[in-house]
Image (cartoon, one colour):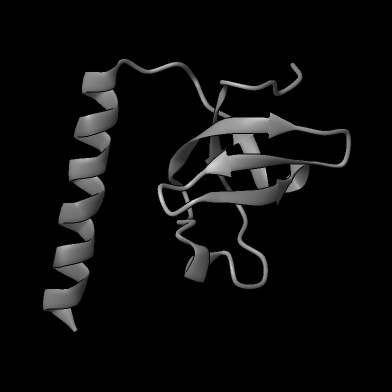
Length: 84
């Protein structure tokens, strides 16, 4: 299954300064450009170049499921901050 423009992908590996560009591990992003060697994802802070081995194609989810997932991730981050 090839990744194409408009697909949702889940980040499984971060490289370099991905975190500083708004990319988070295990988060789902939309593909905005595809090339043979790389593609770009929409991070909300601009587009970020990613390589094929850094992501996996995500299963299609409804907007409601995506919002629930974002809320769950936010809760986990808050819990991590409070536990430190």
